[in-house]
Length: 240
Figure 1 (tube, helix red, strand yellow):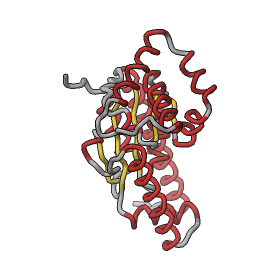
Figure 2 (cartoon, one colour):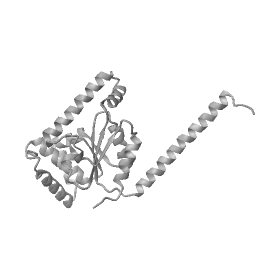
Figure 3 (tube, rainbow, N blue to C red):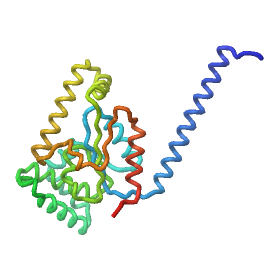
Figure 4 (cartoon, one colour):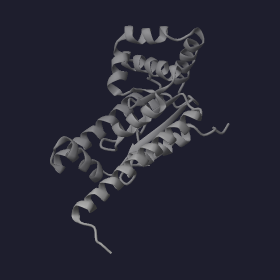
């Protein structure tokens, strides 16, 4: 039997690789088509994340599959701090939806563990912003304690993305071209800021598992595995 030469082996490898890539595209297309046929059982998704836990990639893929809008901390802060933007959002809703916003705000204000929530201007603006966005639906809310503020809303699914300090630091170091030590310091600082924010505005522990429906350790889970798991829950019939 004649053995294949180096050039022929390279050509065979290229053909196999192209076929594998084509198959991956076909499988992804088939999966996305199946997903579109199944209704989403929730109106919004909140994502609480640790730095370096693949949150950007996961949120981006979720939003693409769902055709939902992403509201990260910068966007939420901007809306909360600019009343004209917030009022424009409210005006886009019908009368029934505006009533739902009012009800959502009242539910939050009645939470006994938040005796001071809404007393400061930013707190009140953030509260109204989150209520408005969640009522409109088709939204992925990243950070800003959305899972705590909106936990009484049955139309939301609350997700927590975490991971070990070492793995998260390795990702940040690679992405930002930092030393491992600098990456760890950066993550520690970000984690501390998030915990202080949740404690200040919600008087809660960001790691309290009672406020999450799904939790993922992304040390060994890929973006695809996490996204597929979340999509499965978003589209399954909910228990009454």
